[in-house]
Picture 1 (cartoon, rainbow, N blue to C red):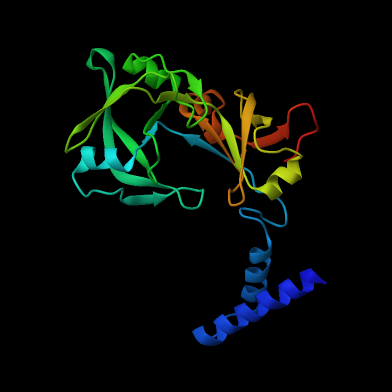
Picture 2: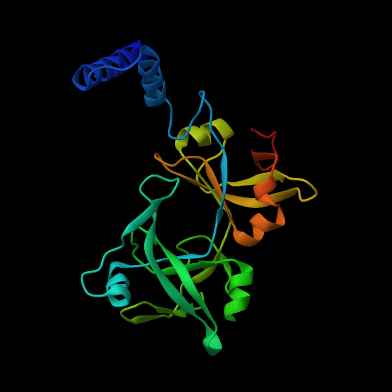
Length: 243
């Protein structure tokens, strides 16, 4: 009964919007209603798995944005990311490691955070001469630092350089579908010609609004030839997989 009420309310809202805008087709009405009833990212009443390569990037505090790009500066969105509310900013920084080894243009992601953090792949950290540990985002205590250089100034990070551990974003409906909860570990299998790989220790990061998306780094994406993948599967460790 509650489902019928919810549907009728949604249909009423859609029809009202149509009357105000001049009208659209009945099929568009049905599509809008179905979309409104599904959890974020779902297609045809089930999760739609996406696997993305998270290339090297950094997160900044408001204070560091002003130091690097000038007083009063804020991050300027350039491209929305798959997760709602997150974006690649127009700004980039130079990341400098020991003995002045550097990566010249590392993208800043927004929005700003409470602590600045640089996320690299293993080959990036080797290039910089930094022994970056594998950590989950935000777990930066005891990690090495670096120097960030922007057009208006520089910042010495005492810590915050990590190799981001692989993880999967999902909402609570996704978690129910897979039988997992926030903090659990899953397995990702990527099948591609002559490069198929299974990744263990994929951390579940569940919240209300996330869409189902696995993040692996550049080295991992190259190892499984993700661009040529023919199939990806995600499963809870030790149980039958869900496509």
